Length: 135
Image 1 (spheres, rainbow, N blue to C red):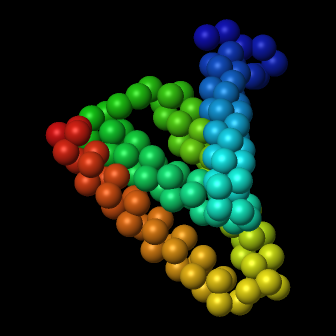
Image 2 (image 1 turned 120 degrees about the vertical axis):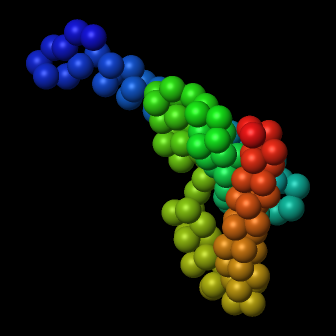
């Protein structure tokens, strides 16, 4: 690929792949948060949903990459760094933890453990599914 001033064109393509994935993930997260928030009330349930779904898909994608050598390096950056990275919302999770703490401290414990244990369970389920799909 050609370069100009030390910046290679393939770096620009990679950056655009990450940006496209990030924009897609952010829009998906916003849509999910809006839907879940309207359905159950409270933005924290949208954040929880995004984190659990993100854990599931990163587990599935990890299986696809490791077991089936799926995707080019740019596609992997699009998916992992861009799409799933923007879709999951750990910083927002922390914000909601502080917000819930001031409203209902017992709900904070439920939210915390549901996020942590649920994320682990969703990841393991997806990895198991990926093992069946890609081997």
